[in-house]
Image: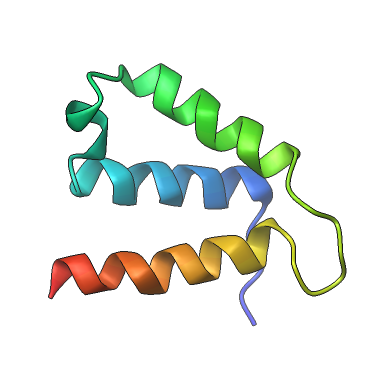
Length: 68
């Protein structure tokens, strides 16, 4: 399994959302979007199986539906 930091995952999520052009839909500046993702990451559940890494994995799979 690859090991990424929470900040790495935040940056990946930011890149995916930028690619999907989500930030423009809400007239959101890049820094605000990154801050929002980071805030979500740091306040995510700490249950052993349901944490930000799991949430990111689900997000990544769902976002792939938009690429196809």
